Image (cartoon, rainbow, N blue to C red; front, side, top):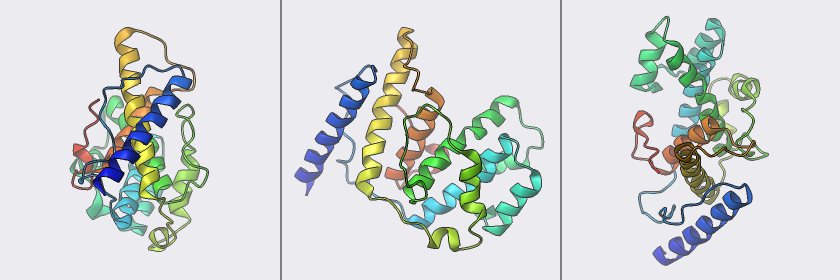
Length: 218
């Protein structure tokens, strides 16, 4: 089994590197494999669903979601007990600094990744160029009251999550390397989207790590 995981991870790494090269991004072939460690395993669907549901009103607040819509989402899905400490502090702050508000607004991209993992983004994750459809993301939950959101989820295979995690990890390194060297990124790469994807996908494959404590080291 371990040998099979290693072979799958080697193929996954090669595929990601080929995709990066095709986009004109730098490749670090020394980066480790993804999907080999025993600690990399699926999270429970319910946990993913609640995390996605929490991110939607939180990020929506930063992007101009009306307070009554935010309150409705939290109450309708019973989210109060599922917010992280950082999210609870943000909710209690009536006028957060602009950098904090913008940071939480970008979490819509993390929510989009989790919605994809739950099977709600059937077309898959597109190249990280354009921001996700914020209205559509919110409606995926708003149109499914109570337990329907979880009941209607059709999670993608864990191997697909590992594939995307591997790509996002190596792409995040490429983005940071381009920043260090001062080289321009291709037009179809948005660094903020790459960061949020790497963050969310790391959380998905590391079930013992809390959301506020995810690391994105490359």
